[in-house]
Image (cartoon, rainbow, N blue to C red; front, side):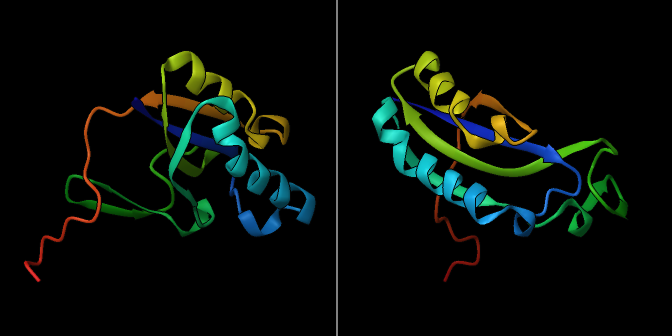
Length: 120
């Protein structure tokens, strides 16, 4: 199966702590329902608000997200799905799409998990 990253977008600053308990439960249910739609959840992360971001461009380090936009990346999850159509169906059902935000689906080109670069 192919892997897909699904990026969640929300209005800035996108603080997960601002979600109502019902909205948080909807995200939890979505994670549990991924398999019902033909996928497997590999990893999922909610991000801290965009106000906590630090951006790097070359030698310049600045406070804040990489781009100054109304929407910011609020989280990301990676799934395995049989094909792009299945991944899109899973993403379409993400609560972010009903809570004023949206999602972006991108095939994963390569990656690694749990690799230590410290040698220990």
